[in-house]
Length: 89
Figure 1 (cartoon, rainbow, N blue to C red):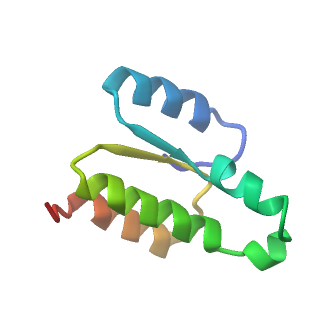
Figure 2 (figure 1 turned 135 degrees about the vertical axis):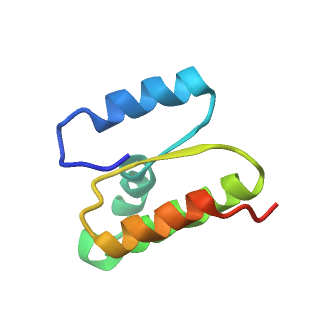
């Protein structure tokens, strides 16, 4: 799930994840504890990389995944789209 800040992504993602009983991964929740120890400039795109790795692991286990974040970079959206079509198991 991607979109501009404040448009309701998280609310929709949470309801959908609960309804479908699938994993919800939120970039904000992943980055928050990291940002308490390092600067945002240092963190850079690492949060997105962490989100992707955790999503890959969940998909490999056969779980559905919703990724909740602002994703304005097309290559990342394409990568995630491809994750959803891969079946490594």
